[in-house]
Image 1 (cartoon, rainbow, N blue to C red):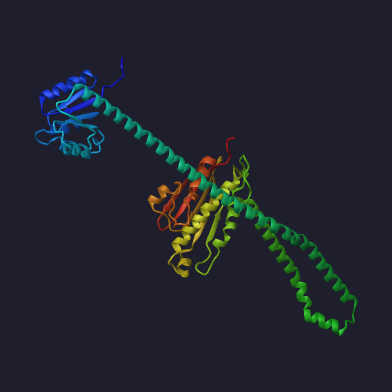
Image 2 (image 1 turned 180 degrees about the horizontal axis):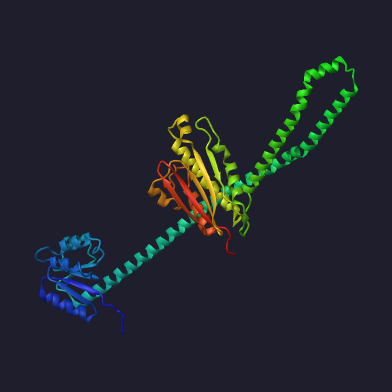
Length: 433
């Protein structure tokens, strides 16, 4: 049984004899044939069944062949159907008119059967080849567009990763440079405290065993206020110790933030990652001449270390907190210091254990919020609402990829214009190997 479907030829001619002769020749050649005796009937007929090719008489009552051709070509549904005019008019002007309307060929009456069949076969093949070429071009264009987009995405993500890597290297370098001098100070504070205590003890012994101090010594003791020094110097050493401990803590946070990822996921305390990211962004959170400090409220739950790529999660925290600060700065525009102080800019960071094997991280701000149309596209590649030079449209796209693809988690956004935005991330506590 043949699966070949005969091609349909529509013949439009007001002369029955012509219709009969052409139809018989086309049928014998293996084509399916439909006929119409004028342009009006042909246009109605085509609404139900589209032919593969049309043989169209020029001189017909009612709307002639030229007008019929014009109407067919102006409609997208029928504009691509090849039309061959059949006419006794052989003047150049008529041919030019027909070709300008979109016809592909002319057959001059009286016509020869073989000529008609050859022209029909030729234009059907040309039409088929044209359609196939258009299809292939469309496919290749789609493939190339997808390839270009993937390359652009890979390039921009590489740039973003390089930026984070460069930031990590810088932070790690700063932490390393801090460690050496602060280690020296921290290591010497304890013996310095002991030396001071020894000196005070020696002074006490000297005063107890020397009843006749010279007037010069008495004046020197009064001038330096020995009793005040004895009381304040231990406090000063304690303050130095607290400052040193604080710098050591900062250095540790910097090292946590800048840690490089390994090939496999490792257990990581996400609270350390959040704290280290907050520290990196401290300069953007503190008060300035235009606004009070942005308060960061940490509501941490009891979470055990989760299996992850720590460097990638730190990148997520960096992007989300940076966006939250940007949203607060946007909502502050045009407000006075007092008005900003009254609305209390803040960022809430919550962590919870939803189930024994699933952790929740919530980053919420009370900034400008976003419209529903923006929220629907917020994770789209290259989509950004920031002005040129302020955003690449990669930050949240990368966040989505890291959470969903790299860590098999989920992320959603909740936002109300004028009230703020919250990003909620769910991460498996243990990752499948």
